[in-house]
Length: 314
Image (cartoon, helix red, strand yellow):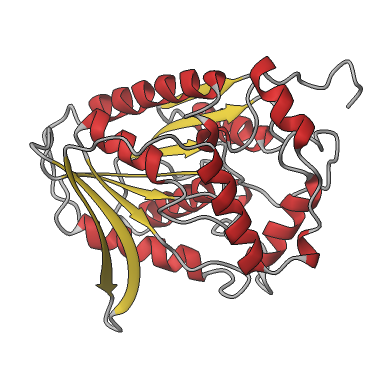
């Protein structure tokens, strides 16, 4: 990509990007990376917003083996739609992140939509490569489906990958979800493109995260959802991308393939933003405006997919 073609980030991101240094992730332990990421997220947080409801950390025991998966549950007082559940998977390259690093966004969804949200603390790579994260997230979705009358999955970055993989898996098994929300998702095996290095997510970062998550698994559609044959199995979908993000082509291709297959799809681009902008939204005005737009779009997705008579999922 020539300099003339390289996308320009929003002006209020320029200072942040100028201060970022490339990271050799192979030289830093996963534990240290997680601590540094959590510290980075905390730098951009203001005071914790009030939440009229209950936020609880729980452990869900699922399946015949009673496997335990930690979750954070958001239950607004006076839920607007009892029985409606969004299960959310945080980003962080399957290596970083937690329900806590993504708490402000999941809290905002629950508050804005008056909706029950479950954020999953799935097992992280490289200690737990594929399919550990997928299995944890699928088990929580299956657990939520037992009582839900409307069920959606969503996530950002690696979490968007998990959401797309799980929605396709459940559709193939005859238990589809009602909607999915994919926020700057990573959906295919990386190609080593370095043209957008220096914009917050370098090609070396992407390669490291994919290698950690993949482990010894041969890539397939559960690992990289864009490997699926057409038509991709998907519910009504909201896809959003950032214009200065090397993962932007993943979201664009996925949305195009769904639209070509006749699947109801909303594509929401944010041209001047970078990968991971959700974590910046409390301090960076361009990211804050985008988050408001995204929350409105999620609300519309919920309204459009829950307009029909509620049904019991299995």
